[in-house]
Image (cartoon, rainbow, N blue to C red; front, side):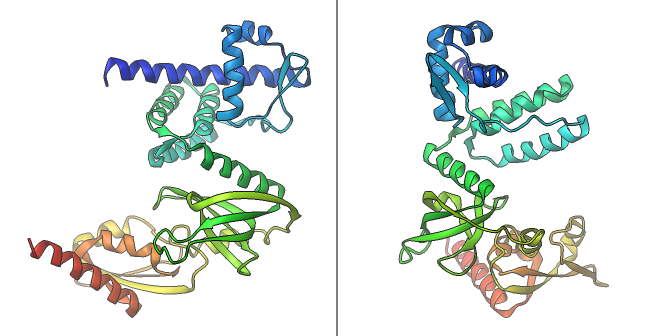
Length: 335
């Protein structure tokens, strides 16, 4: 890393820490708020920087800042109550967040701020790794403001159980599908490790069924005044249990595979799906089967094993994987 890059990284880290101090100070002031000179004295910066940071906190961190008679404060609902975590609980949260950081492709200020708060209650060794995680995140490209605004609207509607109206670009892979409008009851916002993206799962009133929406393809969100009853307790988790990754609104399909002896041990080391059943054969190979929601997502996993796996069922998936393998072989044989 060059000197200029280290300087930029240090400046970004200092800015994030400064934002955090300002927010914590305003949180402690409650309804009284504080004048800019009070914030400057408490945080240790100039009055001019206070004004600039307050604007950035509202626009970049999307925290509601109020101002009245020359005083500023954090609006009610801007922050959730503090959590009291044991060291082991904090470590579990940290590991989950580290996983998010490894798969992120853009800097998320909300995740960075959460890391900063988490570091406060941990021993120095763990806190040091959290700071390193913030450094890792800060080197990514900036988050798209429009996308962050959409996530914020969806999060609010999800928490308040309000129906949203979406404009959804469903034609990413098929331009003939175009963009459509939908009224959706947001049931769940879920990350995908396969696509490194966020998805909205909810009841699409326009289609009359539960659907999965990739948030990157949502062009606009408008929360309505209409409220909805959430699904029965455990229903969404039960539905996702059949998904290979994130898609749960497809027909249940039994997939049967045979892995070669060369990779059978590696396959058995991990439980890939809640419904899987494995049966070792005398020759060292492994018969594997599971019932999943559709075959779109499991297809990439199968292809990742190359020639060490054979699809036994369903026939449509076997033909599809065979065609892909033949096309791949043709690319290399034509050279």
